[in-house]
Length: 338
Image 1 (cartoon, rainbow, N blue to C red):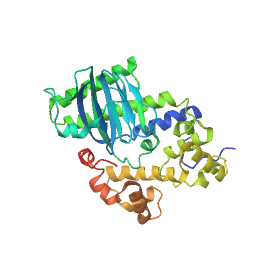
Image 2: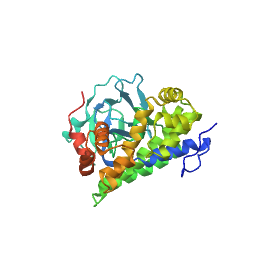
Image 3: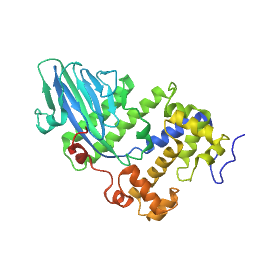
Image 4: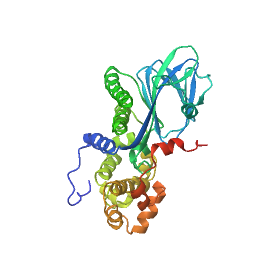
């Protein structure tokens, strides 16, 4: 028998709406703090190595190449019109052929090896590949539940419909980059929001029906999917494993084991991430006292909230409110990860 509705809670969404409700909630939480773009023109043979502490994307405008992510066994063939996001900026290479040596991309940037149209140039006299490369820093990236569940690489393959949408967005990006008008950087960042949402939506569409494990499989599960829907609809409630298991008419142990099996982490950790993310939103957008934010996020004290917030984000709530996440230029100028 299903648990009793919580007082004041809207009726549960039907099972078939869980996907849309959850996906809408996750996509709604995407906000870029900053972004940066580079236009490249590479002639075979060429290869670049990229590693930075932010999401990195590549749009193949012309030609083709190989992407290989450190630790990912199979290289990915990228064709004209493809869009790929390395979601956490892990070290990776792009090359015309898998055996071509790769140079550090940011050393290339520092050397200003660009042509008259502002494109970075590299390589020999062979086939031309044009790529728009970029970096994206997300607000609340250390607590954002979406970033935690995405795979290391989102590969959006070209279709006619996507080619049209992506082409319009990238054309707008190029126009803003060339214009130098006031506010162009802000416009480009908003366009990067759109590009990332397009990539995530394509990933959801292509994998939600077939995933055998992970968050997408959890969404399809009758009970764990409902648990995720409840959590995302009511992130401020002080959920515990026991209270949510009771809500789903499951034993505590069965719920905890099933949640961890499908989602890939213990329910307590997922609960806390949602609460920290909701608190970070309030810190960023409002002037509420820390005591009010801590209480709304389900913490018993400001001290407990501050400890949890710093553990997840690396900053105290006061530091986050004052400075936010690091700007992209700071990320790009940071030392390479080992």
